[in-house]
Image (cartoon, rainbow, N blue to C red; front, top):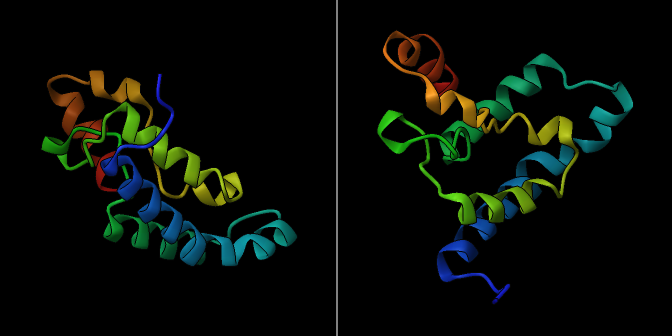
Length: 116
């Protein structure tokens, strides 16, 4: 079994790592000192995550998510783990159970979570 990344996994990991280092890590000290993420910072980082394609990357592409499979998501999660959980959760990866939504549940629950 090989534990080395494929080229696609490397690309995802490098992209997420750059985002985490550039957008999330600079706020770690503030969040730790306040013991919360200020609402305006949360909104700013969420907007950047959406614009960068790192928001809802685990959801189906046809519904507006990133459509990443398990191995690519694992590479991304390793990089999100480089920062505090309070900041990494802003780049929402909705609960996989939402993929089981059907009918009206898709518009009521799934799509709003995917689009932020």
